[in-house]
Length: 198
Image (cartoon, rainbow, N blue to C red; front, side):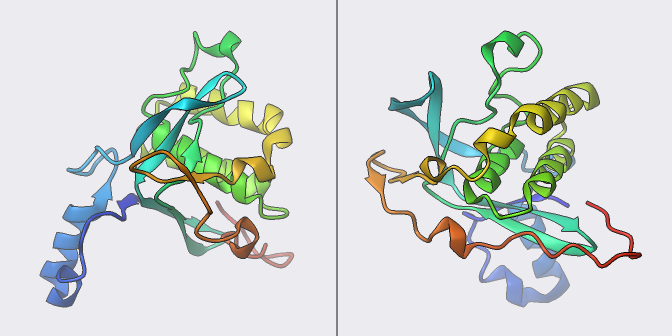
């Protein structure tokens, strides 16, 4: 499933039937095999850092849709969310840079970690892996990045300080549009005996 640009105006198109739906897809769907590949728009926050890493603000909201436990889950990354992209220790920068083709997936992952839904960290990491694939990240690189978050990411899951928003125009801190505890994106795990896929 694709990433979807939430900043595109599609209200008029949705009422046009099949042709309108195709127009919506062209106007909003982005990713490796889509016409619109330029999707994550951020602004660098010149006076904000996190442990020496550059921070940025999402200036164009987007969503990622992917099946989890057989249910299509849509995660909306909102305007104003603050991210540090991929939190790659500097010793590994020769393998993977913090910013690159994986950026849409990394911002999504930051957002899911900032929400910190209970018992959903493994699912957040799997969504990160799938989103990297959809963004066209080569297999070796996404495997390395996935293993890094599985091994070293636990301490960053659900940190209250990571639930941060700024005004996308000025960079001034603003109150979050909603609380991180108000969001429940991960569906319940299927009962025993049923197959689950992410």
